[in-house]
Length: 108
Image 1 (tube, rainbow, N blue to C red):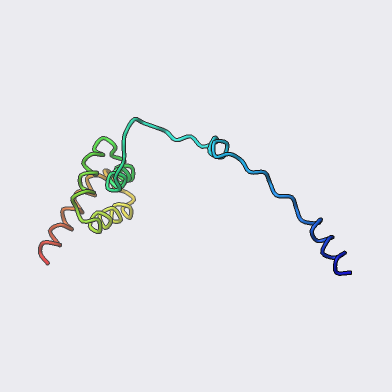
Image 2 (tube, rainbow, N blue to C red):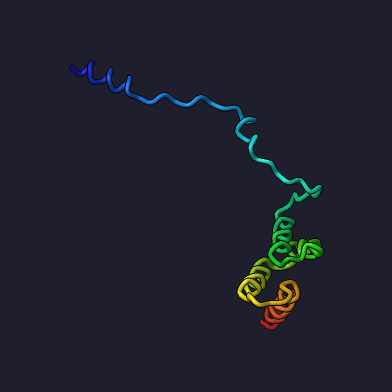
């Protein structure tokens, strides 16, 4: 009787789906290549800063800041800007807060 029960459970197993090739798997996803090269993490962070601040014209400035400035200070300034919903210029507010945080750091 045990053999009958095990043969029934083996036949009741669902069939596995066939494997798909990697090409077919990623075929539906298209990346927008804008011709730029972001190879370092700080470049990605600077680019995301520019996006958040709606200031793509000065993205190289944010990449340089991401490379040279303390990341914690940049994130605090970005958080301050994100909380200010009625700011006319997010970029100006970011730079102002960054300057304040730098002064605060040097006074410590």
